[in-house]
Image 1 (spheres, rainbow, N blue to C red):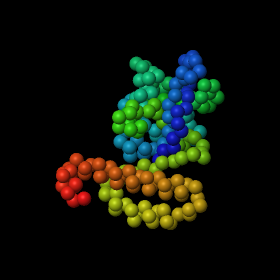
Image 2 (cartoon, one colour):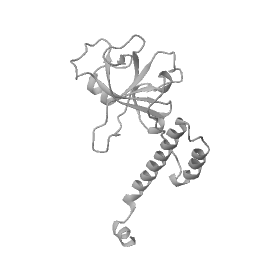
Image 3 (cartoon, one colour):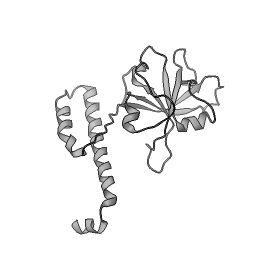
Image 4 (cartoon, rainbow, N blue to C red):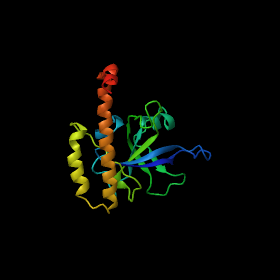
Length: 196
């Protein structure tokens, strides 16, 4: 699961604050422990989040390569401290524990985003949006019945249920489109046109 907040400024411990409008910024994503495995995002340096990275422990963060190259060129980042905002409060600093690969989540032909990841367990909700990411080894159509039982069996008044249901529908739609996209190169366009 992930929860996203768009482009938040952050401070780098030991560095002077840049002029207003030139502060480092990244999309903030709160994620569950299996997020990187499910999404297939590789670890470039350091480590992924661990079970001990929870409430009450030292706050930790992972950044993507784009953030590393843009704001820390040529530096060893693991162990560096960052915090949200331009005037961080004590106890809000996060230790960078790793760097992960970039993802083209803004579109195939657009550069990836600056992204800073933190574990769900270290931040209190409520979250505005939560996305459920699903990786399946079966055809997406076979998941319809199981997903329908999941959605129907829950209370529609519960906000988390509604968010989960919407995320599941989106995940199935995405999986179905990926299957179609994989099959498309094998299809003969003339045969498809004749069939229509």
